[in-house]
Amino acid sequence: QVQLVESGGGLVQPGGSLRLSCAASGFPFESYAMTWYRQAPGKERELVATIDLTGSVANYADSVKGRFTVSRDNVKNTLYLQMASLKPEDTAVYLCNTYMKRNYWGQGTLVTVSS
Image (cartoon, rainbow, N blue to C red; front, side, top):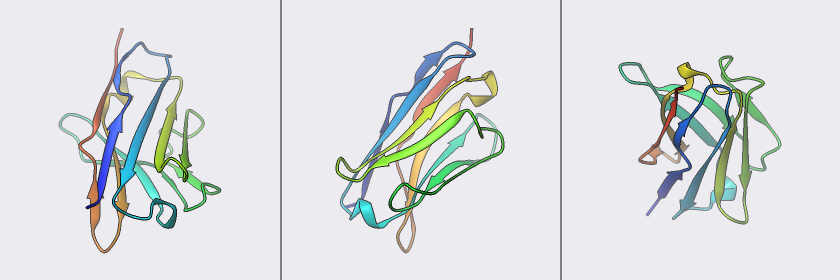
């Protein structure tokens, strides 16, 4: 079955960096676009970044453009999100997602940006 497992979250100071990973299994990873979302406490889920099948095309929310970089390794079946210049408003649970007839979600990894 489809599994998406995020990791790499934690507590980081403002201005710091963090890299998230999403290990995918149970489907042909190289055949599907992948997306990172985030959900902050009390807020709606927000699309952060999306990447195409080969990793050559990526799109970002305006709020993270220039600070976050999405990438993928189709040999390791892993999606990444490199986050830099983190701000307190980046605090959220980050989830990876793919769509195959329906949405599939991981359990999420918590990122807390605080001094």
